Amino acid sequence: MPHPPEKAESEPVKEKPVTNESEVTVQSTVQKNLPDIPLEELKEKILTAVRRESISIAAGLEKAEKWKIQDNTITLVFNSPFAGSLVKKEFRTIQNIIKDKLTWNVSFTAAVNKVEKSDDPALEEQVELVRSVFRGTIVKK
Image (cartoon, rainbow, N blue to C red):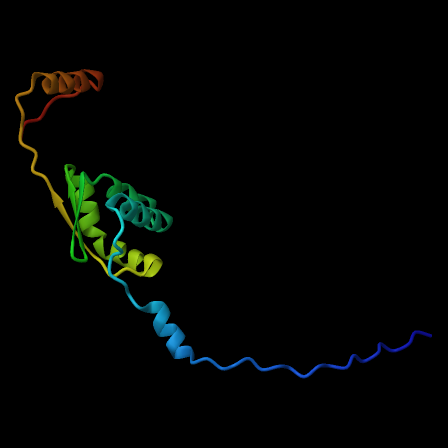
């Protein structure tokens, strides 16, 4: 006949010192200004954080020709109106990702360079090549 399992004597539970949870929470959510690191490193950290949340927004950020930092504002300059408008439309999402993932309090602005028409013959040749490949017509505005 099997014996009933022996009861193990339990040790008293040692209590851990109580910490003030509200202090811990406040410390972990304090927003920091942009760190004093090289621009390329800052860009890479931001792009990595945004890429994990939204690949399309990160692709738009990567199209920026220039990154300018003044105080806690990052200004991105684009040559492409499409990428510039994407970042303008998603700037709150970008700010929230940076705030949540990197705990930096930063604001974003986007500017698009105005592209003037050029009389460059090489450009005209490229346009003609694309038109002929796709058998299209050039529509003037």
